[in-house]
Each structure stands twice: as C-alpha cells, then as structure tokens.
Image 1: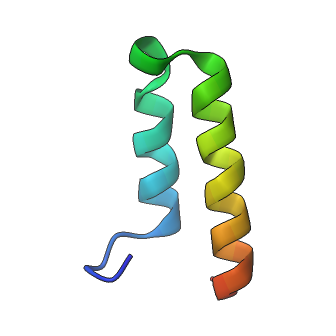
Image 2 (image 1 turned 30 degrees about the vertical axis):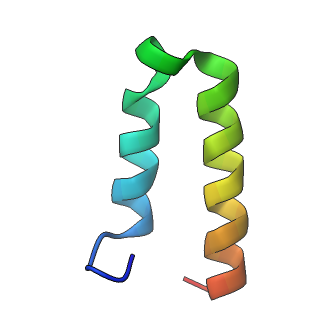
Length: 42
C-alpha cells in the first residue's frame, strides 16, 4: 500500500491465489486485508 496499490487491487490479487493456496487460506488473507483496511480507514 506504500507503493500505490489500492485495497481493491490487493483483494483481487488474493482471489488469484485460490487455485494455488486453496480457498480457506485465501479467505483468511482477505479477512486480514479487511482488518488492515479498517485500521487504516481506507
């Protein structure tokens, strides 16, 4: 996020990991991203 990537772009990148990491890890990452975005009030 310090280099200009938006929260939406990060969310889309996480969704692209589903075939490789599996659905549960990707959803955990998405949940963590949501917490970070809430903390940063983005």
